[in-house]
Image (cartoon, rainbow, N blue to C red; front, side, top):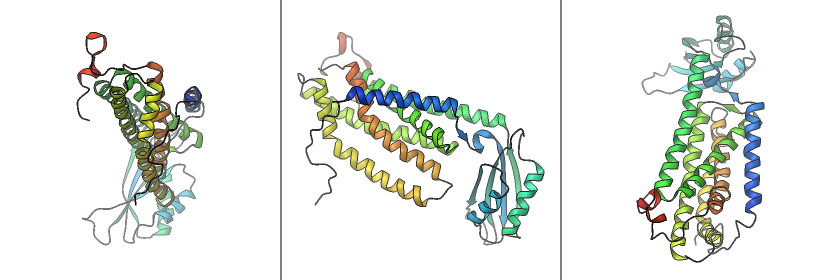
Length: 325
């Protein structure tokens, strides 16, 4: 007996309130941008600059105890992780401690590093610092620019692919949905002041890939139905396409969320921001695949007879429409 989250056949009218859902998305995007500009993001060490300390100890690394000892110094954003390497001996327990740059300083001062060492030696007297490296504001600024370029390049590549695979209206709808997902994720990070670092950028790129996958599945079914029902109103065909892929969408999103929620609760502080970003992205990505991408295509309109090129000249979407994804 197969598990079904929805009946085998559904007939929900997803576009009955298309102006309301589209308006809500526009308002959410504007609010997220305002939060980004006014409140700002809680940048982590990767983007704010700071100091990375590598430690080695005889006793096993206790990340929780290390974090408690360092938090008492009130140094702001501190990330602690254990380093695993098969070449390490039993008495080589290595950790990485990253401390954000303090206000008005290029990096963490020597006195602060000394305080950190004293605090950690109270947890493990055998602990020693094997290396101390600093990341200044210039390097952090370059990381921010590189991260923005990575997200922009991903969106541009997807726009071109969808244009070639379908039509330009589909491409605009897909990129609008991805832009919606990325901006809303940045907005929620600004609202909740969750640490924003390179792991979050990786999460944003993951969200882009996840969201476009769901969008393309529905677009592909929409194109099939456009060939079958040439006289049916476009809104009805879109509703039919979304309903036919609804079970797949909910099963994919639901099983992904099960794993993400488990990681969000049990994964610990180190990966919580990354997991939260992807969890939020799966939710808004599923929403945007229908209520943003398809709404844009519905507003722009699309050709009905896919057996003929547009305007007699042929377009990129028509030329490459039969390429397998």
